[in-house]
Image (spheres, helix red, strand yellow):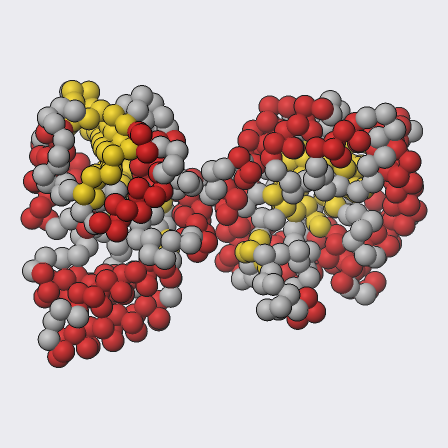
Length: 294
Length: 238
């Protein structure tokens, strides 16, 4: 699998990042097999979080066995110094390791949170302290929120080394500022910040729970995923060809083999094919009933 | 007002900012939206279809009403003065123009073009023989020929349109591939099947019924298909 420099961290990440939430849905033996599988296919960047059920615990054994082959990203939703320090300790314990390569502010949503994180007694103080103590090596941030908030975070966090945010052809086809993640990507490139793409495989939100109860969903994903080899490959190719460092895999373990296959086969996507995908999805989404032209 | 990437790609190397523009064949106003977004000083959006005209008016309102004039007119008889337009776009126009009207449209666009005018012509290459959607388009054309004596769709090779404009004095600038492949979605197929059915309804039942049935059958069996290419040609008038 190809690798790309993760910003200026000095690490070359595989173009697919293993979203280890998938391990939460497997028994330990299956979780072990999945880690062996993704490593065998050349994935060297893993992402985990304490809120992913038992993912940290289930990743632990194989992570410890292969610690030197895995660049480990973890994250916290805590916004204060005390909270973040406690969560980092907890993650290190649950993972059973003494070092996390990349520690990220998880799911930044509001400007006020950014004030808390960057202020006195904020989470970033704990991040920086941990970096000095050698518990973590790099600081990152993840967000599904509006691009402007992420751009503000870049301005306000000088030592930010990676960003994780949505990137897919549906988002890329929208012009409004609320979907302008391309601007984030561009800015990150200028600043030497590594970029990790999420929601690459999103087909759309799940139907309402009235229509489809949560327990009846066929996949353990945040969103309804594309689920055929061809669609997964074109979505991977699209996301990877936007210039992201790495594309994060889906949450459901049933789809992992297809994502790995797409990542291994990745060989770029020309611009006319990228536009073709954007156009196709724009029409599928379009509220206009009869749109004859591209 | 999302602008399709095909439109932004076709316009990105043209000096739209501050220009008086004509969108020939406005459709749903995709290119009008793109021209406005790129800073056009004025856009004439021309269409023969009253529904399209009303759609474009709603689409540009309320922000850009003062920069946009939606004109219900034939592109062979534009209500515009000679040499009055600085940018002309024909985005997906020519495929709905029958070959016999081609020369008249090329001349009329040339008449309204000011010296130094830029012209962008975006359209579809003829589909490969293996394309399933060809059958649906062939059926739509058959119904159109029988009902109106003219085809509904003609996919001109880029070279044909290029030579037509060069013959009228335009200097060829560049060609780009906008889409490869072209995504013919379920929506497109439904629209074309509906068009074929509407045309067939003008015919005697012996012709109308099998054509309608075949259109619906093709729509269902094909579903969607990504095939063919969409190109963008650019020209300049000396």
